[in-house]
Image 1: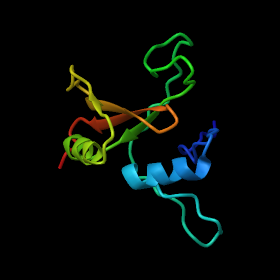
Image 2: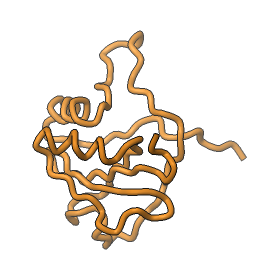
Image 3: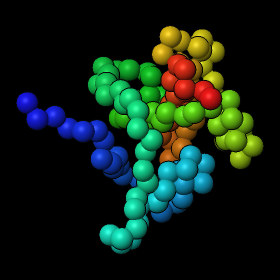
Image 4: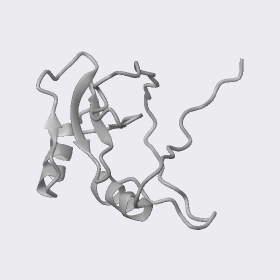
Amino acid sequence: MEKVLGLGGVFFRARDPDGLAAWYRDHLGVDIVPDDYETRPWTQTAGICVFAPFAEDTAYFGSRDNQFMLNFRVRDLDAMVAQLQAAGIVVEPDPESPYPNGRFAWITDPEGHRIELWEPAGSHA
């Protein structure tokens, strides 16, 4: 069976696509999609990716209006949390972390999408 290699993009609607793309660039380091084919788009660090459908009534994504939640792997959750808080972004660390698979915290982007930050177990240098 032929299998996909991984995620090739994440596409979603936004009220202010340019502003939201700039927020992700400025606070999480996700490069804005280039306007040409010569410039390389954002490149992820190779690693695991969890693909998990949830029950439609889950509260895990925050607001019931959110149909998805982004999960970004981070090397150093403490450093990322400090950086985001210094920028005035509210961060909700998981009070039950760590788990066998790592540590978590959540933020919300300017359009209300919940974002999970994940430091996989053993990834902190």
